[in-house]
Amino acid sequence: MTDKHQPLKPGNVVAHGLDVVDMADFTRLMNEQADDFLDRYFTRGELTTADEGGNRIERLASRFAIKEAVLKALGTGWGDGIAFTDVEVVSQRTGAPTVVLHRRLVAIADEQGIVRWLVSASHTTMVAMASVIALAS
Image (cartoon, rainbow, N blue to C red):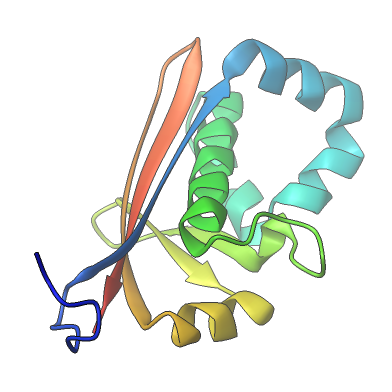
């Protein structure tokens, strides 16, 4: 058992978030509210990246799951001044996803000592899922 008052060492896990998106529900939402939905939940960069290659809806659902998982890990949810676009999913040079936080989420992550994210996501024609781990310095 560790003392919660011990200083965190580099790479210590601060939080974990997990989310699963049902592709049928997500596709229906995309078809019914496409214009409003896209700008409300995704940044221009995320939309551009999702357009590269096939499976656009699956790629967007995966990014949506990552955003939800990050908000769960931070313990904030969305609303109360926090938008889905405050979590931006970007690709590293390797193609692996990572996140960049914006606005209030930057301060919230700083307060929690979070300096880095480990992101894993996958999708099929039925589900998209994401797991994120917040690491301290």
